[in-house]
Length: 426
Image (cartoon, rainbow, N blue to C red; front, side):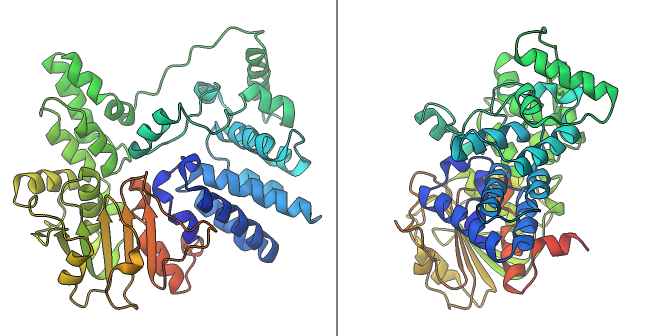
């Protein structure tokens, strides 16, 4: 579990994981599939809630391992359980054929067919393209440009999925949809115009374009009103990306309100927490301030020893503005020295820095958990054999994103003998 959580911030971008972690993840999924298939099935279903593509890869490894040992049952159900987005069936089949060969075994086909019946609808046709439709964090964007795009295999189109797995439509209307998808795939039907979703998430993604296009004041205020009032489900780091590209400040009050709306839904972190954060990186600051809002008691310190007062209930974007306007930036960062200097019998330490070499070098008492988030992607370091262990009560995470806020409660719950899917079922 910790292997997957170390890259939880990457969301769908498993292609950007360090190779050693990819190999270790595959090895651990196969090992647990052999020793405890039910635990592995529960784990993969839970993993899909925060890490989509790794869950698909894990389900394929689960089915491959079961089939290799002549084990029948469970594979169909596990494959079906991780397919929750209309593009998922095509992604899983593309991964299977590129990894295991063109022959797709029956349990995998049947699991994909079950999901296609559940997921394919007229509104889902917007995903019937050869695009990836992956949810990628902001810090991966430069990497994909350097690599010339996303190296993950392109997903199968809906028609290819249907032709290969033969799902049985639930209704006559869905049967017509399946036939339409096959005809579209092979050029026997015109493209169907599908209106793009008009959601707050689209507004946030397009805010830079709106800002630079000089839209009329009334239109701008209508956009701002939707940001302030509509429930988007988005968490703070999505709004940091939107804020970063703006030339004007007229959107900031609405962004600050929207960024703080769902912070209270994140898991609580009990006890006393020390958070040491990079003094000059927006993503690190907002990530740290979001965690701070969920701590029962917290001390937030910049890596130059300067303390930052946390205002309960404050939007992390408002906190970022206070940070920038205050006296937080300046003096050379002290690195791990800031943590050692500020530690005072805290229950845990969180370090959020642009680069972290080894969390085991942070000199606090061994029983105290230390969680290190490395914001930069390009300096990920792992041992060549993939067996790197940060040490007892130490966890090293790569990248920050909204998907990572729940990692601490999950890890501490597991250390106390509580699996997250067991809690979710009660």
